[in-house]
Image 1 (cartoon, one colour):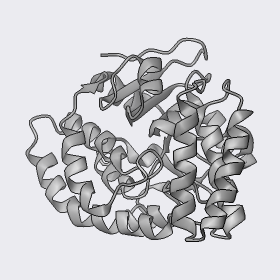
Image 2: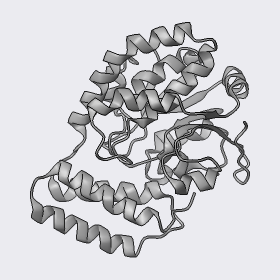
Image 3: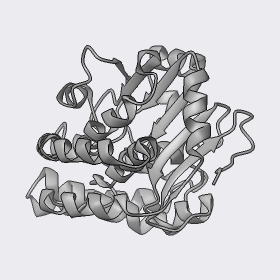
Image 4: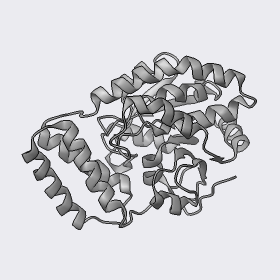
Length: 293
């Protein structure tokens, strides 16, 4: 999907948030903000928002020397998610429709996002998760699970640290022996890395690989040759998070996107209001895309 003019102030806000996280030096804050404003004035709005967001975070890492500004936040998100997990396991067990509940929880946990909401705190996450889980879900659950059962080879594109802990409850209801979970190959906001997959308990239970690159969403041309080959041969792709939707929407692959609508630009594009949970299928001709409700 394309960026919009409304994305520009969001880019600037993201830049300031991560810069303040990476360093307390106000001179560096000003230097980075001025550079982001300069780049934003020349930004190609035909590109997906996730692409420009990725360049912002790379700039901050380069100019502050902080290779992973969100490392502590990711570790805390994993710790908190694991603390909350037993209660959610019991809720899934008692749910009238466990499959629906697991899909909703996996999408609801997409609220653990420090890119869109830079002022999110660990204390806010439990209530944010509850509120997110209560939001309406738009999507065809039966089609999703049927497609997963029929697919011989599935890629599961993970999103945020902490969120991945709750994804496991969905993975347990899918044919996980056919699934490879994909994390980022390098720091990208608070997106999950291999260490976060280990923290989520995926090691030895499901195959795990990475994109071979750092960057928001899935910038295919920047990913490793190994990942590009793996992406090309997957019979079905499950993609978590709004940035993955932004970067892969409309591509010529069979993809189920699971994410929470977090901004009006994406909401207008997909036809659902901010706050809704969406299970959206991208059909593989690269031109059409539908959300089945």
